[in-house]
Length: 226
Image (cartoon, rainbow, N blue to C red; front, side, top):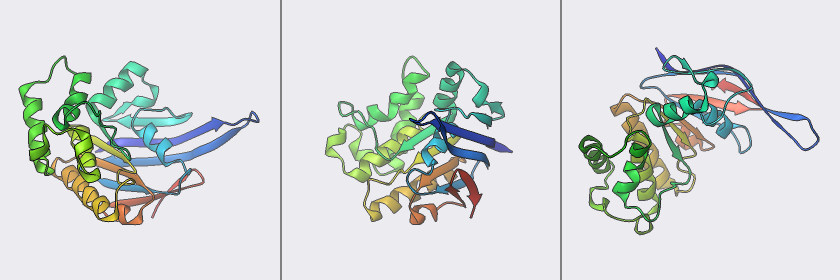
């Protein structure tokens, strides 16, 4: 059963002359638990727009977006915010860690979006996941003391802390050197498989895309399986 479905998605943006530029044209896509998919395309091809629509950060002009059978394209902002917090984990190119918070505190921040306080279960999950990614010795470290790969691994754990069904990654290794990029990519894929999560990675890197189970190209607003 598909956990994420996009059906005939269209999206345009207005330009200065009063016309509109089509970014996505009749895009359909589906993903089930345990699936990993890469969307490849050059800068400006609409990859981030597509990911934002998948993640309820943006809405399409036409078409439906379903998460766990719910049409999030037609949901109000409060419902989309709830879905983002509970069902979707985001990993971005920049780690977006808060410099004044420790590694453990940064990982636990999304919990506060859905709960009044951090429970012992969430704390245990955070410590366990940080150990899984090799950061057991850095729980109380601040981001400035970490390497780029360590900061991105922290961001990966943060994306998983609320146990989302879907992980969306937007150029998650774009700021890393090649060796670190592939190591972080392999880690994201391994965690997705271990926890039976659906994973979509948007990238321009064919090496990163090669780690995914299925591959799509986004060109001129059209998504094509490759």
